Length: 515
Image 1 (cartoon, rainbow, N blue to C red):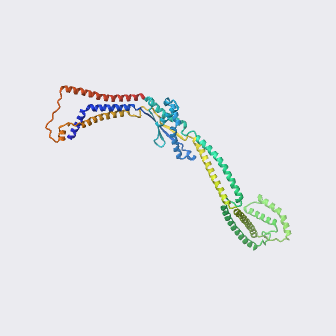
Image 2: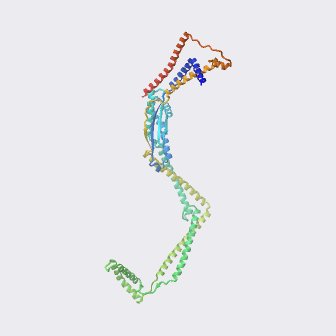
Image 3: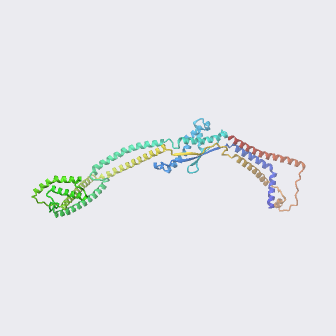
């Protein structure tokens, strides 16, 4: 511990012996550093926070995806830093005083674009910052210009709405309309060629599709018709056998429900209706019963004539089973005839189409080409039509509603303190660095000297015992000179710190003039 203490004392003594060198180095470095800091112009930065809210009600129905909304936010950034927006900002601020020609305007727009920063702090929260350090402006004017730039950026964005003028959308819609008209003409021509081909070759067979597909459908239908014809013929044969074994009439009497003719049978039916009405509780004055009796009275003369013509003997009544079988036989005969006619028609059409295929082998290839051309044109037309309607809907949503709403959270304020450089910190660091460099220079020079400051150092270096040492004798004149030099040293050191204090006062005074 004692050795370390001695080393420190020795180092301090060596620096003190070369104190003028340390002070000169400190003065030189401080003057150079302070001069460099003084030449750096002050930069003032103004900031504003904006909350951006996207349209959230209609975009999903209009086909506007989250990616499109992210593009809207990107377009907001591009709008803020676009050349048109920045030219407006230059014209509305003090930067316009620096513009004397279009070239100057382009230069100012380029510098302004580099000084503007738009950063996303959260999902929908953005910070807009602008920095100015125009050498020809005062500190107050630079601070005022920075705040004016941010405010005008917000004003320009509010004027444009962040969505542009929609000219691109109008041009795109016009282009799609022209393309749709052209494609519609081509589609109609392809449809006409397809219809003419079908009328020539495929009009014989029902359905849609190629020749092979229609032939396959016709064969399946023909097989189905054959099965229906077989079933109808089988059922018809069975019904005819039952009909041959069934009597057309049933023997009976007039009183038992039979009759001599149609009039007698109608009278029997009407009397049965009267009996049913009486069973329901109808009286003789009921309108239906009165009408039924009047009808019976009108039919009785005809029934008397039928009995007289039959000689008073009632014939047999019609057999209901026979009548039903006759109706079923007629129905099955009609079904069998229809199936047979359909079969003949299908066979004739298929034979005719096969004959045309044999005579013109390129029919199938021609049909495939026509169908392919038609389907391609139709897909393109449908896609263009869908794109046009989607674009028109999106255009209506974007023009008739507000896609981006922004609210200023923190308005831009005029900065009171320069953002760069931090002169108080730099001035202090340069002072500390200059003093440290001076001490280091004095210590380094002491290490280069070949003398021995103490007896122990001489004894360690030579390995020989040191018998004694002669101390320094200071005369009165020497004391006066040393005192005078100490005063000069204090004055020079005090002047260094006074210069530092003056520079700090000047810096804070300049800041006070900005407010």
